[in-house]
Length: 485
Figure (cartoon, rainbow, N blue to C red):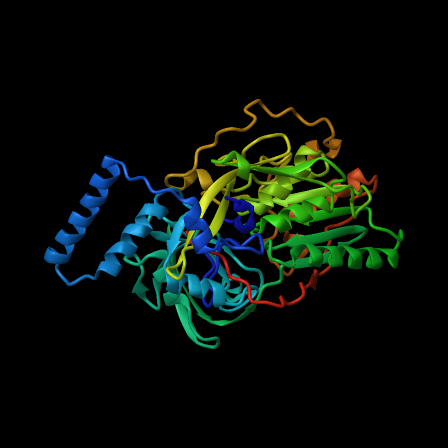
């Protein structure tokens, strides 16, 4: 089977009309036709398999006969399928026909809701990240928050999909979310209004002669939008003192992933040659490697990549490739650690299976599954504990880390001397972070210092230029939002 036609990368679930989490997207243009897939699957008819299937039927009969309320075969079988696939690992799942239809028809990159990225964890709904500029972000909901109530009604007995559906609603309607914040133990309630959320997948700004590019998720149009942002920055820098860009900051913080082809394309824009990433699955014929094609749109400018615990999957592919090739300095916090690839497999008209089919490996041959990417210059976002108190390694029944390069990483010798003077976290006098005020972004300000040092420039006062947003072109065909695990 050729799994590469439907590869998914990401961490969580995007609730199209209400909330949204990790960027789990189709990475290719083709899906698996059900009939073609069926031709390649041979069923196990061993005596043990027959015995277990008989047991399944017997249990169904007992439940249908004795459960406190009548239940249908469809409900029981869907529950069995949920458990069969969902308990394999945190990123595999079965979708009913209705769930698959919702995923196919909801608008990607523009949806009505709150702008939350959420993930199921041990039967609870946890916030991966609020999307920039959305009701959830403006309200102050934070990564790691647990959502416990929607409109003052508990969601503890709901599946992730059911909870997400409860958060959906028409733009302009009111909603109240109650959360528990693990860092403080406090219970907080946020009253918000649903709205059409326009996801800005690329944002840019010019700080002195340093270009800043933020990637929020690896959507279909990401690489082209990033390239446009870079060209715009070059034009802006040409009119500024000095007349040219002297470095690039690539911000991957809280970017939960997305499409494999976009991660490869972004990496290829900065790496001239060599491996970008490889995937290895159960079947050797599905293994694949992608190499750079001899271009670097920056012509060798210094690059600093910003990461945190919300940088996952496709983000980790880019950060890992740039780090292994010594093409960029990674500054910030350790990444999420999702090193697996999912394939979306439609099952006729009965729904679809989103199945983990491969692990991916950085150019040095390392799997970051459960480990993440360690920054070259560790810098905390705040003086408090890590905002991302959980990562892939903290999820239930995660995929094991096997098959990669197990040797210790060779210490880099190209880290600029200024790294020794970069604080590990802001001191007590540092102002509270305000997304509209770059001078309050501690990690960004340290990245500017590093870039200036690499370019041989002095470090001025903290940059305060407001970001210039660059939108990707609207897709010409509907794309599915993030799939769910």
